[in-house]
Image (cartoon, helix red, strand yellow):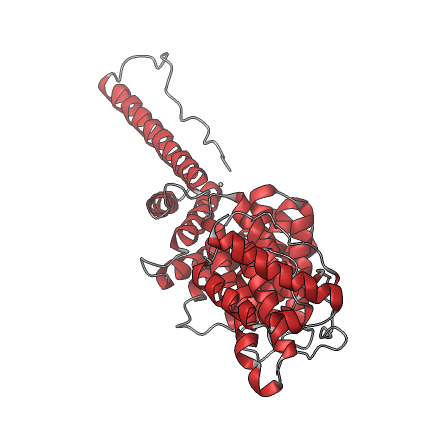
Length: 415
């Protein structure tokens, strides 16, 4: 048995004595403090079982010490238990869950930002579970609850895009609607929450064909754009999102005005997205799709050429391992084939005209090359929790919607 295992077992034994007797004295013994200090020195961030024991040890000391001597143990408990909250190591002290959620928030944001490009679906599922834990630990009156609802919805929507789970998509829409309803009109983050909801509604429309979802998606995208300043870094993406849903309405109704507006907003999105913009490839792909739709409607060669240029740049800007790369390459190939067939048809017609001009007296009884029909071709892994023994005072319970109460006789954490 190495030092990590020995010290973890020693502290775990002390915790069991506390829980069996409801007497906190075992964590106040000098030998106990020495054991905890040594364990804190050698435990790594992924030694979750040891960190869980260490966190509970300091939590019990915090409750045992006088109020003017307990702050150091309170901070030590939170520091040790935050990785356990992040990586699903149960159980955790119920009264600490709101604070652990606050401490975990920056890491949860980082995982959400990585999720769209993550090659591992397990990482996406872990991100969904993490945001659910954050949300469950957040008091209904917390000033950031609406934002956490929106982020949870975004995580669910990303997983839907990987797995096709209708349940995830419905939950994403519900979370997004609750987030928007809980956000006052003047709030600086309302545009982002509207945008997240609009994307989820768009995806559900594409899955179910419900016109109500499409109209709500357009309304959300337009309101989000209207609330976004010209210099805002997310304006390009919101312009592109509006263009995408307008194109969907064109495909449903055939109204050319929607398609023209989709292209105008798509071009504005490209113009607003610098070369290093993280969403530039998607913005370019959306514009290419709208230009192709107008080419297929009007036959304007300029639209086809611009669609190819945009699609080519989208492929170039998409990393090799990105899940959308194959689809973007396929779309580019389809556009290039359309142009090739048009060029071949034009060349054949030109050759036929030359042949007729060179033989004016002959009967036109040979077959004349005809242009073919233009084809229309559409566009940390989760850790398994390893729970310490479930002693009654430390048993994990589902947090209530309100502020959790401390165990009987235990002081709640300081404000």
